[in-house]
Length: 124
Image (tube, rainbow, N blue to C red; front, top):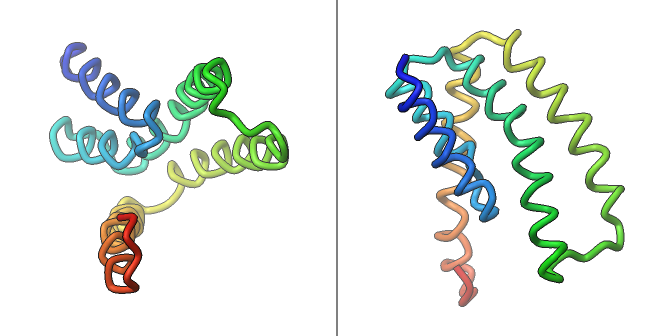
């Protein structure tokens, strides 16, 4: 696998993740479909790459005054624990199950704006 292709995938995932748009929704398909990385490995890499990426994004948002500090640790500590647990699970679960679960997640995420529009919400 080319270093440059991996670098570009990491760049795209980091850029989208840093903006809060879910870098894994881009990183996992790039790794699996275009670079042939097994599904479990791609999801594990995504979960582990999320830790430093989110720490950096959190620092930038805090510096810009965009961070609500109330309740922060009640969110951060379980997120750290479960991202490590999720990475361990991603390596152990069958690739087919991971693919189907991730596909279902993407379908649900993409349906969310349509559901909001049907409810008459202006913000999509």
